Length: 137
Image (tube, rainbow, N blue to C red):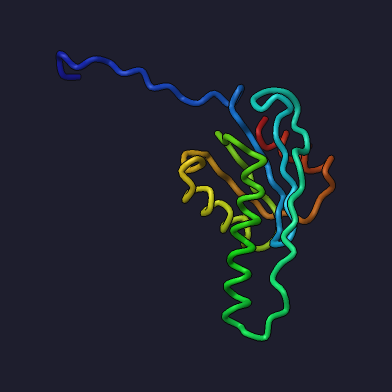
């Protein structure tokens, strides 16, 4: 090590006391799980968000634009339930999880969050809480 350079202490994020969230989602429903006291306590259901999807529109371009706008609204409604994220695990069916992870990465407030994903079938609120608890412990 060259003389005269100070040693830097590198701090790693402790998984205890970090703001951890889990989401089960498909393109129409999301269930959000987080800790009772934001950064401590048991995982509990924080809420559910629904995306009804686009209206039946005969104009394909209009329907596509409406679908994009509704998906962005869906993502924003989910994010509102998680004011600060250190770590998030997203599970569910289809490709919507990847789209939501990209949404988080492109949003300044969430861009530094550690995110992971998996694929799973719809589960009860209780099973989702247990699944996320096991993931983070």
